Length: 65
Image (spheres, one colour):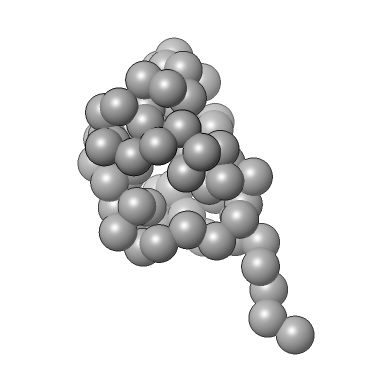
């Protein structure tokens, strides 16, 4: 069975700044729905993950594991 949950620290880093979901989405050039999916651990595109990492000024590996 394929694992559909991907652990990450997006919400943790977003709230530490603090940024709203909509502000992070705007900075990353993504929709709020994509950010919400990501924070829930649902699969998202690697390109979207890279955009969020850049918007949070973190390395991809710091956010996603």
